[in-house]
Length: 552
Image (tube, rainbow, N blue to C red; front, side, top):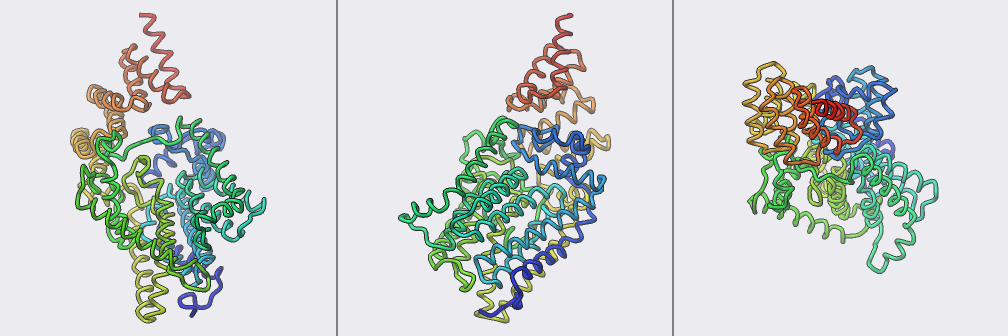
């Protein structure tokens, strides 16, 4: 095969080329401030800003103070690394953003190195560069807390590379390395749990595994799968200890109806697939938020659901057809590369697809980072194949795709400059979003314009429904602004909807303590402690309420 766009470069040199392309596309994000979730998870999290208190965060949920256990996220390694960076950079966001740009470049290099073990070098480098500059990655790279996605993906890709390069029978050292990378990747972000499925995919892509070959395959690979199973068992036990469950069924905001089973969520899941395909292939219109007003909840079969089903079936048919064309090879450009890319995407997107359990979001650009490695494999194959058949057209299309993606990314990075630009972009691009109205309410409350803030909050609740997170946050704002009666109503509504969560009763306990309503304060603090037994503030309020009630 002709060298093509790799120019005859070695695979490591091609990996460095992809890394440089990624650094160029995201360099302008280095000057960004803390924005959006950064301000709570990093800037407002005092526990990570002192090295003395940082070790204690290992047994705390990822979200500090507000959502905690009910959000079902535990990412202690990510939390520690935020804290270490805070100590290194002194709270300067520039250092955080440099780390993110470097991590993205490393991920792009790893994509090239991994694909280079499966495909000819030209396809690997084209796919790696497209991955490096893809606009849908802007949320991850240009936002500080995107470090979790970047580092987890990098560790995941590193584990895959070790598996591929170790051959059929892995030695003890390779097994330990893969196990350690898998553990760290999951402790940075839980979506890395799909690695066992990806290992099977990588093995099947390079060989033929028929039903009769399963026993022989398992005899070769059982030590690897045993290590992965051991890691997963430990992770599950850790999540139960910290969060109280393996995975909380937290519904996407504004889509609470999907949690009670009255409406099959498959209709809505199918309706998101056309949007996912558009984001991967034509990422012109990007959004901070994809709540139901942007991606609507489907209460029955809709045109979008039907289109999503058609896309899903068509993609699987393509995967099946190309998979049968022959195993992947670094010498021959096999059509199986397209099927491999599709199946990689399917396997890695499953934890955030809402198919098996609810994840808290209908769709988010950040969740497509690792799955888009599948796009890199498929696009690399298609563009190199086009260049073989139509050299001028193939080269022009490839260069145009890289340039257009890069330009869109450079523009998009500036949306994440600070919280104000995020807020303005959401209002400008998707004013129909319920989260946009929520942010407007926060903006007015921060300025002391409570009347306008209340109107915006009412609109947000009307759009998003009675989301526990929204009700709790609005109730908190009302209570601490002195609107005790409406704040109490909103918080009690949230508590009644999700009595197993502790945020709403913990705020109510503070309110009732301030008002001297001791019986109610005792009930609320009990409920808060049941959800979060180690909450010292609630333990104090409970003792105070008991003492005051008995003295009266």
